[in-house]
Each structure stands twice: as C-alpha cells, then as structure tokens.
Image (cartoon, rainbow, N blue to C red):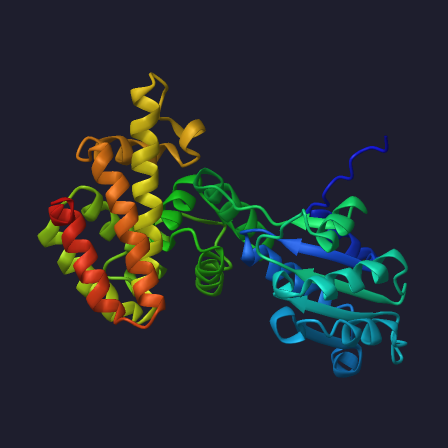
Length: 341
C-alpha cells in the first residue's frame, strides 16, 4: 500500500515561490484566512504587473457551477511572454459534482505552464476532486493560530517588518487588537511607521499608538459580559459600536461565542479533575486566569443556552436584522441571564 500523502505547509509553498518552482495545482483551505490570502498575494507576484491581465484569471465555484471547461480552457492556454499562467478558483466548495469530476481528469494530466489554486474553506475530502489533490500531496492547510501562539506570531512578524518588540508588549498588543491577524498586522505597521528606528518597542509604545486609538477594546467588553457586569458592559458596547460601526456587531458576537466556549471548556476540564491551563485551553496564561475567574459565575446550563442564543443572534444579523439592536439585547440577556427563564 502506498504511503499516505502528506499535506504541504504554507511555508513550503512560500519557499517554492522564492525558487519560482510552483506545482501545477494546489488546494488551499483552512481557518487562517490571513495567511492564506497573504500566500496567494505572494504567488500573484510571479507574474509581472504589466502582464497580469493576460496571464491571470479568477473563477468562482458558485458562478462556474458545471461549466468546468472554462477553467480547463484557461489552464491549457499558453502563457503570454511569461513562464507560467495563474488561475485561482475561489469558493471551490460550490463546484458541482460534474465539474469536480471533469477537473479530476485535468489534474491527472495538468498543464505544466499553469498553476491552478483551488480555494475552499472546509473541503469535504470524501469528494473526488479534493481527495485526488490531497492524494497527490498538493493540499495546503492554513491552520488556525491559537491564542497562546499569537504573541509569538506578533514577535516574529514584527522582526520581519523591521523592528523588535518585547514579550510583554506582544501580549498587550494581542489583548488590544484581538485574534484577527490582519488587524494585528495593521497595528504592527502603524508601530513601525512611528517607531521603526527604535531598537525595541515596549508596552508604552503599543499603548501610545494602538490603545490610544481605542477608547474601549472588544476584550474589555468581553470581560465585562463574562463577569456579568451589565451596566459597565452596556456602556462599553455603546462606545465600541460607535467606533466600529456595522461590522462591530458581528465582531462582538464572534468574540462572545469564543469566550463562552472557553469558559465552558474550563469548567468541563475542572469538573473532570484536569487543569484548566494554557496547554489545554490553548490560550496565553494571562488569559487563563481571567477565564477561570469568570467560569465561577456561569453554570453549565447557562453556557449551553448562551451559545444557542448567540448562534441565533448571529443568524438574525446575517439575515438582515439591525445588528446594534440585536447585540444590545444579547449583551443585556447574557449579563442578566433573562433568557434562562
């Protein structure tokens, strides 16, 4: 029996870009959309800007549906004054079964002068296209970075940007900017613009550049909701929505879901006699202390119903309900536990 094909790491693909030796096709998937898009942008640079319109095409699975021949025709076309063509198939999850079957035939005999990147969020590897790409060792999983890994990521990214940052400043920046790597990277760019010539950036500099631009952070809001301080939570929520606008409601919901899950996980671990520590919760030790403290204010039944309510609220906002009204009701109910009646 042949050895099971291994997934390729994002780092391996970036190394291929540097050597200008890309494979004819890949499947990009996973929750780390920031790194996924960053990798695609680096791949795009293999084609000179003035030749990009002639050698790069983007398709969408939900628009292509069954017309996979358009992708294959593009892939078989000869590059114009360029070594390689680039084709990106986004929302590949939406390709029809017949399209996937047709594309399987292509990857068995691909054009060596074209690189196709199929992009899917959570592909079903029982389907022929995905399993065929994975079996050939061309699947790239952009894995989520856990909370306890983000400070180290900040430090590494800062060095690549051109400056050093202290460990405490990394944790502080993470607490302020949150888990959105795109947003964290944006804050690092601001720090570099202002303090690029400084040897090492500490918490003081982070506070001046990042914290000063946010009167209240989403983490402060989550802390107040998790601790059931309703008055304080509503004040912070109002200010946060003023700062962040429409998108703020979904940000709050996402972070609340994450926090309530962590609280539930901590309670479950402790009830089984296991340590609710950084290793098990996959968050920074600084955050663990808060979660353990907050878990004392929540019953298991409350956590289960809170998550149900949060998912319903998320669906309501995405269906067109006013985000600010929905999230205000959510925060009030979570703090007061009215929804448990």
